[in-house]
Length: 485
Image (cartoon, rainbow, N blue to C red; front, side, top):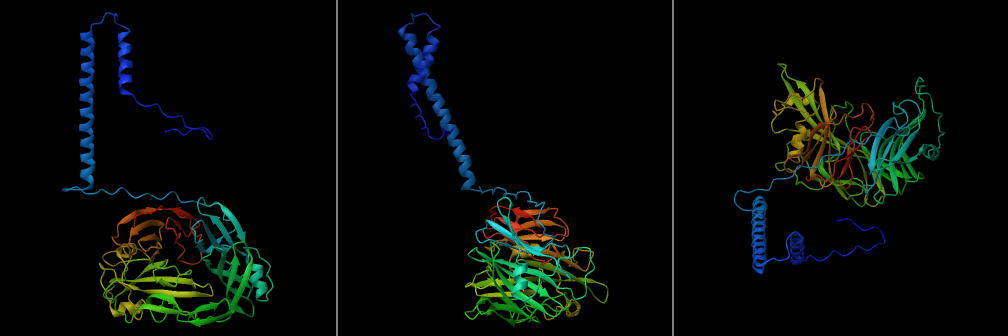
C-alpha cells in the first residue's frame, strides 16, 4: 500500500458493495439493449449471476483448501518435514583502499556495541623492527567501514617512560645498531567503550620495556604502566598500583610447540586479587573422556570467566618416521590479552595451547611427538563437530598435512555464543561451521585476501560482539549476518 505524503491523512478506502458492482456491470450491458426488456429475462439474468457467483466462490474455497493442505503438509503430519531455507550469504568483503598510513596491522578490536572497530599497527611494512616508525590506532565505523579518527599515542608513551621520541627514518635506511623502536602488540577495547588497553614493547639502547597504555577513544593517554620483566611467563599489569608481575609459562624458544600456562585448563577465571585461576584443569596428556559442553566461550575483555577457545590457529606439523612414513601432529595455539571485570588488571602474552587428535587420523607415537616437540603438550578434547571440520582443513584422513611444507595452518574464531566457528585457511579460503552439527553455515569459498598485509599477531580474525561480522587479517570487514548456528 502506498504511504501518503508527510502531513497528509490517508483517504479512507470506499467500502466494497458487491451488489452495486454487479448492478454497474448490468447497467453497462443494458445500455446496448432496447428498453422493452421483459421481467422474466431480467429475473433469469439475475439467477445466472447468482449461480455464477456461487460457482466462483466454491472454486475459490477449493483452491484455498488445497493451498492450505500443501502448506500444512510441509509443516506437520505424515512424512512431511521442514525444508530449511538456505543460509544468508555474506555480503562482499569491504576493502579499505586507504588505511591512513597503516602498513603493518598488529591487532584489532571491536567496540562492545559492535558499531565500531579499531586497528593498531605501524606505519612501516617492517612493523618497526630494528628502527623507529610511528604507530597509530585507527577507528572505523562498522556499518560501512568509514574512517572515524586516528590516534597517535607514541609521544605520550615515550614521555611517560622518560625517553625522547626518536626521529622517524627512511623506510629504506639501514637500521642502526641498537636503534630505539616502539612496537604495538595487542589492543583491547574497554567494556564501557570509552578507552583502549594497548600492549606495547619499547626498546632503547640501554633498556627494554613491556607495558600497557590506557588510551581514550579521543586519543588522550590516561595511564602508562611498564616493566622490564619479561622471562618465561605471561605478565599481569595492575593499572591501579602501576605495577606488573610475572606468572605462568610461555611458548618454548623453538616456536614449534607451545606450553599451556600452568596449570593447564580448559577455562580460567579472575580472582579478586587479580590472578588467573584455572577451571576444568587438565591433569595429564590423555584427553578428557567427555568434551566440554558447547556454550559461550567467554570474552577475555571483561568477563569473569573465559574458555581457551579464543581466536587462534590450528596447525599440522609433519614428522617423518624411521621408514619415511609421514605423520601429522596437530596443535591449537592462541595468545590472549585479558582485561579483568573491574578494569584494574590486564594479563598480556597469555598462551593457551594444546595438542589435538582428529578422529579419522592415526595417533602419533612417542617418537613422533618428541620430533614435533609435543611429548609434554596436553591433549585437548575436540570441543565440537565444527572443530573437527576445521581440523580437516589442515589435515587429511590419511594424516598427511595438506601442504608441501612442514607446517600447515588455519585461523579459527568462535562466535561469542560458541555456536558457530569461522575458519580461514592459509590459501585465503573461508567457511563457517555450526558447532553442534558441523554443518556448513557458509561453505568454503575463496575471499582473495590482500597478501602480506598483516605481519603481526596470527589470530587477527575476530567476530563482532553481536555475531554478525568478522574482522579479517588483511584489513577487511566481512558481514555474515545472523547465521543460524
